[in-house]
Amino acid sequence: MPIAPDVYKKIVTAKLYIDGNFTEAIDLDRLSREACLSRFHFHRLFTRIYRVTPHQYLTRKRIEEAKRCLAANEGSITEICNEVGFESIGSFSTLFKKEIGHAPTNYRVLARERQQQTREQPRSFIPHCFIEHLNSNIQEAAPETVM
Amino acid sequence: MITKVSHVTFFVLDQDKAYEFYVNKLGFKVNTDAKMENGFRWLTITPPDQPGLEIALLNPLSGMMNYDDETKDAFRVLLEKGALGAGVLHTPDCKATYEELKTKGVGFKGEPKDQFYGVEAILYDGLGNWFSMTQPK
Image 1 (tube, rainbow over the protein chains, first blue to last red):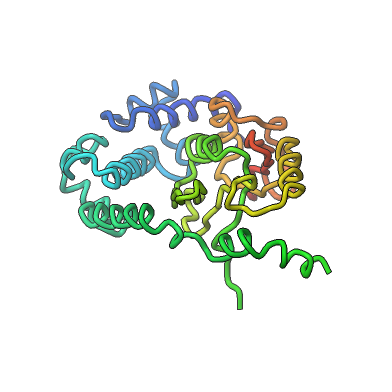
Image 2 (image 1 turned 30 degrees about the vertical axis):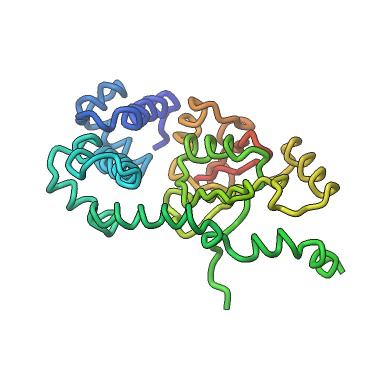
């Protein structure tokens, strides 16, 4: 059954509410009010449109922000856990490891190492063709390609 | 045997604006943002659910890209005209994503339409590239 255009706008409104407020405590009642829909209809339609439940989407946003904070070295693991909207360090660490494949502490170490490499050896991230072909050989290679 | 694509290029005339569009509006993830001593910026992004595909947002007029003046002029003309078609972006729901991106100021060529391959809307990145945003059947 097709979704009416005004219903799309309601679901998008709630999705954008999550995007802008995911660090706060958000529950299904709050989101369904934002969408002006019943809890049941909101949950069903959100899940149909985005292929994840509102709670899964909220968790994903928080994990993404936690990744950013960890990479930026913004506070302790516990502080980041609280700042991105998780209430329990235990559930945060478990979810983070499940989703990202590394514990928050390990992720921070890896992210910092990558940042350091980006600063000190930027060429190591660039495939050779982008540097060599485009920078020095393109004018020689191009005629051969055309012919 | 070639098995997959790991890097592609979107040419843009302004990498800061490209970052704002692709990362902050479309929701792509930054993979690498490295600046070289000569000012060249290697900026790559990945689609949210496709971390293995790096899209290099390259400015063809950058000093590192050693095109001759004629080639640079051609790039500039094509990009300023919006004459390049960059590809197809997939979305789980075209109409919802259309509504969301419209609120963020993304330009579209009309509303989503049913096509034989799915629901499609055509969007413009404001930097020279057009995309089909498609919800596949």
